[in-house]
Length: 280
Image (cartoon, one colour):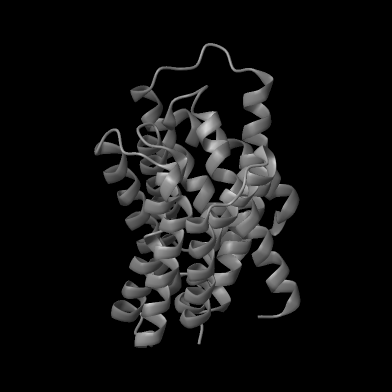
């Protein structure tokens, strides 16, 4: 990975790490389907500024349908199940369950894309996941089994979207694919708004949260995400995303000035060892 791409990937991890606490805050003001809708709607203007070429028309019904499916899996399905689930569980537990997706994606890439999967690589993925659990262990609790199930469905949807993109769309212009997956996800989201009550008042704080989710957390981060998967294999990129929930915890420590526990430090060490082993 070149230095420029490494920097971009670092930004992706950082902004996605911020998304977890931001989404938990946003759900205090709106119900899940409205959060998905507002996040998507405000993302499009930022995409128009960031990558205007992404709005060029896509020719061919087949290609449009493939991008629609990609958006249904990676945006609509992933976000909807995630937000619904996080209504029932903590953001820390949601992060742990969501990050079963590297394991699922890597197994699917070996089965469907025929990417080489060595024992040391798979062991590294498991170590990384165990590290995430240890880092977040003291911060979560389960109050309702529905929440974990919904977030796990989100993880599955996300994993399948990666494989689908790599198999059918990775040779297409990444900016166009990223833009149109957002556009095609909006009508699906609008259809679900009837199942949630409309918010009567949204304060400035909510809109600031949505702006953070929309620009760095979505428009910029998803553009980098699609770019990386268009250039690199699933096995070489996915394990690094274990850093997202770990860095999310670091942000909370910076903000609240609390100390790390021994369990968390061991978790970070396992995470780093796991990522190193996975990418060998």
